[in-house]
Length: 178
Image 1 (cartoon, one colour):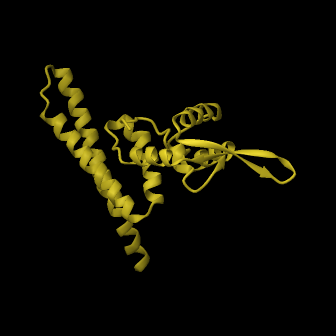
Image 2 (image 1 turned 60 degrees about the vertical axis):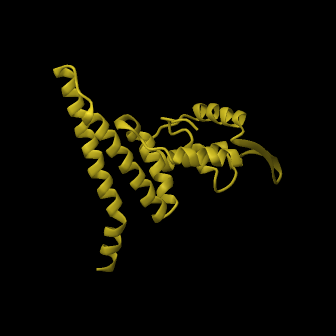
Image 3 (image 1 turned 90 degrees about the horizontal axis):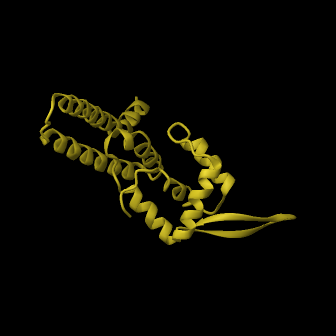
């Protein structure tokens, strides 16, 4: 899967636990990811249709007692692979970090402490590489230098925050013990 600067593959992540009705999927996304990502219902259905075309999910019909059968969305093995590939990507720059990183962080946290540590370590390394490449790039103008300095400061802040974030589980355990 090529780099995807969109949180859309998160839809696949919510289907890992089992099939969901589209409306229930939308409610979960709104409830869990609302602080970082707004996804309209019609936009979600358009994405799901594309994912079904790609073979990443399938629609199954489930009997619902005396009611009409419900159409449920089910993750396919290809969809799981696409989600896993998306999770392995690192956010680059503030634009991707603002949404994509936090959506991936949600799933990394849900996967447990070890997965979270690995996720944060991977992001820290990618951000440090991005910072080093930007630092090494010469600017051709005073304005370019100003923009570069601003981006370097952003990356420094992200790196410091990632370090703090990585320490959080240890600090939380230490507070409980006291």
